[in-house]
Every structure is written in structure tokens, then in C-alpha cells.
Amino acid sequence: MSVRLKDYEPVVGADVMQELYVLAGKVNGRRLQNINSTSVGGGVAEILTRLLPLLQELGVAATWDVIKGDQAFFNVTKAFHNALHGKREEISEEMLETYRETTEMNLGQMTLSGDVILIHDPQPAGLVQRKGDTGGKWIWRCHIDVSEPDPRVWDFLRPYVSQYDAAIFSMPDFAQRLPIPQYMVAPSIDPLSDKNKDLSPDFVSSVLDRFGLDPERPIVTQVSRFDRLKDPLGVMEAYQMVKKRHDCQLVLAGGDASDDPEGEEVLAEVRERAASDPDIHILLLPPFSDLEINALVRGSTVVLQKSIKEGFGLTVSEALWKKKPVIGGAVGGIKLQIINGVTGFLVHSPEGAAKRLAQLLTDPEFGSRLGENGYLHVKQNFLITRHLKDYMLVMLALDYPDEDIVLFG
Amino acid sequence: MNHTEPFVFCTERRLVTLTGVRASNLDGLLSGLRQVPGSSIFYHTHHMYLSHHFETPAFSNDFALWTSEALLEEKLGEQLSAIDLLTFTSIRQIREAIISTIEKAIGEDGRRNRECPARDEFHFCRSKSFVMPTGIVAADPEEFFRVLPLVSNVSLFFHFFGARLRLERPTNDFSSWLAWRGETRLAEAIDALDPYSVTLDDLERKIIELGAGLGRQAE
Image (cartoon, rainbow over all chains, first blue to last red; front, top):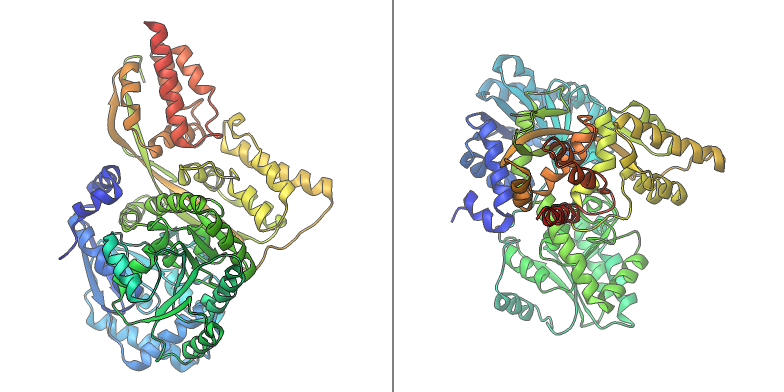
């Protein structure tokens, strides 16, 4: 069953909805053409799938097209992606030529029309060459962490990006020196999705039971793939420090890592460290386990996201939305979601995580207060309704590129 | 505005704009403070009041928070946090006060230029605001206080902080209008409130209390 705009009103409140309708009055009828590189899989396709029907309901004529490319092109853009994340990649002139050729091929085949053309990520960024023919405004929406991009790839992309009318990044840290306006639009969670919607206590209990967890004892959970950057070993270290004095169970829930050699290695180390502790539960969840993940988080006492590096880390907002106190690594977007001591705790080490974990297990009331604050923080800043509002504001901002304050009568 | 004009509650929709200017030490922070537009200074000294409406934040502005937590300059962080924004009537004055506080600290304690940890730089942002009527209108002071509970925090923020500093109006919009409508004492009482020491929820409660108190006096 598809979600309608009105379904959000009981969740976010009438005032937020009213705000959306007022803004929609300023941008309705506008044609917004989204272009990315895939229609399924990945965060961009997921958010477009959810945002588009809602934008359409608000009167924005939002459409979505996907560029074409062969394996060679996607190998190039995968290398671009890694290099923009700061990873060392060999980028050859031939690879740059593949990108240019695929861009040309798509320019020959695609119909580019819209009052606003919203290009997502680097793969279709080169389409902007046709900007002059379309008459619309062009925006480059960068969903990835470009805080420390490989200069070779960024220098290649910059001339394209500079031709846009504006760029959108997810965090202030990702901003670049560019001759165009740069807006911040943080990612969001959908409170009505399977991963976040309310669940009955019976369902939560049944999931805990299925995974052999005791609901009467504290449960400490980290949901993330088995990746060194998510520091599952650091989480275990923190748990083992705390466990000496505080009874608790640890859940490390992630996807099956069989197609990822490094993930397999990390998982093996995690298993070895868990040894024979029956209170450590390593859960390998199949794809489409959103309801189970939702239930695990809802059944938890404390949630960790002890990442060492993080693009944004929306798992933090997902836990805060469920009013759980969260201990997170002080990196990336986690720092926007956790206000230290107000909506959770930011830590820099397993020791720091252990100290805060012990504090929260000793003082659950304080944990509840943090969780309550966290819920309000997410409600205000990281829900899909705010994302909708921001996209409409960006469309409006294109009309007033130079004003800091725009007064409507 | 004439003396019978109603009060039109407005609200502000903000889009955060990134400047691309960043700092990793005090020198960089000073350089950024000197070059960014006024809307950036306003953003970093005020957005916390809007974002954390449920609890008064430990540091009242981003400069204080970053100086203290990323540069570990706790003393300077406290000094920056203690800058009394209510005494300023323009963003220019706020900018100068922040710069001089940092320069003074550097002068007093000797030159030091500690680098922040990697990926913990200060990123200058600014906000682009779209101000629109909420549809809530008060014809007279009695109605003003009756409808005030319906007004959102964002609206309150605009009339209290934004109007005074960004549009350089002499005081907050509520006091200006109430004074025009002859409620001088009420206007002064609201003007005397310190909006920086309370959450927006508390600020609204205090204004409503003032209105109720003066209403009883009139009876």
C-alpha cells in the first residue's frame, strides 16, 4: 500500500504539514526532472522512490530518469565514488574518456526538460553540458562524502559542477570552494517505512525471542555491516569492559558478508572475540529484514554506532526516532544527530563508549531523557517531511540567488 | 504600520547555505569571521536556539562550542559563549565582539594556534530565509495573547531574533507593535526578557504570562 502525504500528519503534526502545503503553493506546477544512475538499490533510488510520490502530491511535476551505461562506465564511476571518498584509486585518461563518451551517448538519447533538473551524484553530472538548450535551472545533488576528495577526480568533475546553478551537499563538511550557491540538505528517515514504523510490543517480543534475547535483561545493540569503519570490535571491547560489573546482552546485527572478503574477515574476528560468551549475539540478517531490525532496536536498552568514519550514519536517527539513547563515534553526520549529553553521547574510543554505556545501564531514567530528546531532534531535523520542505526551498531559492532574506507578503 | 494595524505573525523557512570557508585553528577562524557575510554570523550565533528548543544548549553559539571542543580552548569557549547578544543591535556589532574576544584571548595568553583534529574543522554556513505569513493575525493586544499559544517556535524566533538583527528593527516585533497599540509597559516588559537564556518554549510561556498579568492589572 502506497503511503500518502496525509499519513504523515499524525506522525509529524499538523503544523509541519501546513508548512509543506504553504511552500507547495509557491512551487506547484513546476517540473522537476530527477536523473540518477539506477532505479533500484542504493540510498539514492530508495529516497527518490519515497520522495517523488509525495512531491507529486504537493503539486510538483516530479519525474525520474535513469542514465544508461555499460560495465566499463560503471567501473569508472565506482572508482570515482571511492576516490571522492578519499580512497586511493588509479584514474587513467582512458577512464576519463569512458566517462565523457557515456555522457555524450546519454545526451544523445535523453530528453532533458524541466523547470528544474536535479542531477544526483557524479555519474550523470556531465549532462550539464546541455544546460543551455533546456532553459531550466540545473542542480547537482551530491549524496556522497566529498570532504576529502581525491584531487584528480574532483578536478575532473569541478568544471561540470561549476556549470550548475546550485549544488546540494548532505553536510557542511562536504562543502567545496565553488562559484555557485551550495545548499545543505541532510538525508532523512521515513517514519512510515518498515524500518521505522511503530510496531506492536508482541511483535517486538517475538523477534527478541526468535533471536534468543532475554527481554528482562538490558540489550545493547549496534546495527551495521561488518566493516572495520563501523568498529564492531571496538563495540565488543566496550561491552566486555562494562560486562564485568553490569549484566547485559550485546547484539551485533548486520547483513550477510559472503560477497565481501573484508567483511568476512571482520566477521571472523568478531566471532573469535565473542568466543563462548552466550550473551553476545551476532546476527546475520538477510536482505529485506527491515521489520526485524526495527524490532531489535525497539527492544534495545542502548544503541551504539561506534563508527570510525561515517558518511552520514542514518542508523543513529533510526534509533533516536525510537527514543533510544545512542552512543556514537564522534565522526561525520553522527555529530549532527547526536548532541553530546543532550540526545546521546559522542565518544572517541572503546573506553569512552564503555564509560557511557555503564552510565546509561546504571541510570536508565537518564537514558530515557536522552532518547526523548533524540526523538524530538530527529522529528525536527531528519524526517522525510523536512527533506521535502528542503527540496521545495531549493527550488524557490533558485529564483532568489542573491537574497539572504526573502519576504513574501 | 499605523496604530490600528493588526499583528501578522510570520514564519521563516530556512535553507542552510554552505560557504565553503573552513577553519582548523584560531587564525583560520578569525580569517573566516572577517570574510563571511553577516548571515553566517547570525546563523552560527542563533541557530542553536531554534534547533534545540527542548533544552538550553551548553554553548550558546557554534564559535564557542567549536573553540572549546575541537581546539580545547575551554576558557575562550566560555568567553565566547558569554557574549551578551542582547546588547547588540546589528550583526556587524556581534561580528566585532566575537573577533575582539578571540584577539584579546590570543593577546592575553600568548600566541598559540592549536590545530583541531582531522575532520573536525569549523565550516562556515549561512541561512537563506523565506519569510511568509502564517495566517495567524491579531487585531488587538487581547487577541494577540489569545493566539500566541498557536504560534510556532519558528515564528517566535523570527519576530524575536531575526527581525531585530537581520532586518535591523530597533526591538523585537512584538514589543514594537504593542507599543504602537499603546501597551507601552507590556512592550517594555517583553523587551526586557532575555531570550538567550531560555528555550523558545519558555520564552513563549513568559510572554503569555506577562500578557495575562498586565491583563489582570487592567481589570
